[in-house]
Image (cartoon, rainbow, N blue to C red):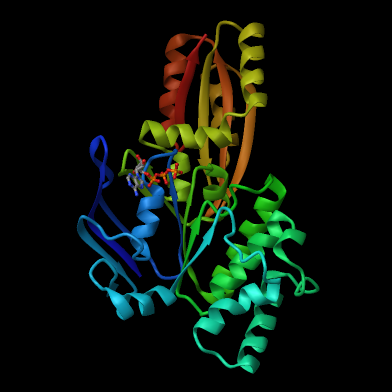
Length: 341
Ligand SMILES: Nc1ncnc2c1ncn2[C@@H]1O[C@H](COP(=O)(O)OP(=O)(O)OP(=O)(O)O)[C@@H](O)[C@H]1O
């Protein structure tokens, strides 16, 4: 569906040339929800603008739905853009138009008759859950409702790709979740391919199938969300994953256990899917004569299944602690020794 080949984007600035996107190779499958995560300045916005032809790459190729958007211009580009819609952090609604008039706007531009427009607007209002708010103006809507209008408007011309530019970053956590649920819903109902950029790992965890991590213009890591959660490789990815796993509550539990049992080894165990560590942990205490303290555990749901971490403290003979770590690794449990007390 989407292919980026050796994409490079350079800008000329007062301080010389700046490379915003560097040698990016990515592919997004049909019907997939694909997330691009990175801190501010990583190049995400530039990358997303390259996907809808708002920017042209300095070198490289951007192909969306069989069309090389990096090389077409004029009416061909305008036509291609109709199939690539976008929603924004600050909604970009027309403030003097009501909800239904905002949604009808792209349909007017596309030249649909009034009757066709009315029918389509009704369907879209239903789809995004705004029934009863048709005549409201954007200033009378909550943030979540405004984004629902943005989504309905973006879907008006039956796009094949929806680009989301930090679409939930201006919303509170609860509203964020309801908008993310809506995106999943339209992805499933309409088979729409969604590419989103964000700096929040929560967004990736909750709705994306795959993720690319960007840093300094480059994609430093790229894969299934569950795999990236389970074994992040790049330092920046580890920092993003820790947004979810390293809660204050967990830090407090670790501090407390070190205070109460200063002599043990803390190990983080990572599980994927429905596997649990129960038999492995029983083995450690029974066969290796170790005391096992459970410090903290949590399970996060991702689009491809649950992902769990468990922090334990192993206390006993050092050789046996080492054997325990080896034993766990051999039995499909990923481990990381997080602190030697
Ligand atoms: N039109 C432009 N002209 C010059 N430099 C630009 C332009 N657009 C972006 N940049 C620079 O390119 C780099 C990447 O910016 P970009 O906005 O793509 O990053 P980002 O990951 O989306 O960050 P943010 O979330 O802060 O927007 C930054 O150093 C930025 O200053």
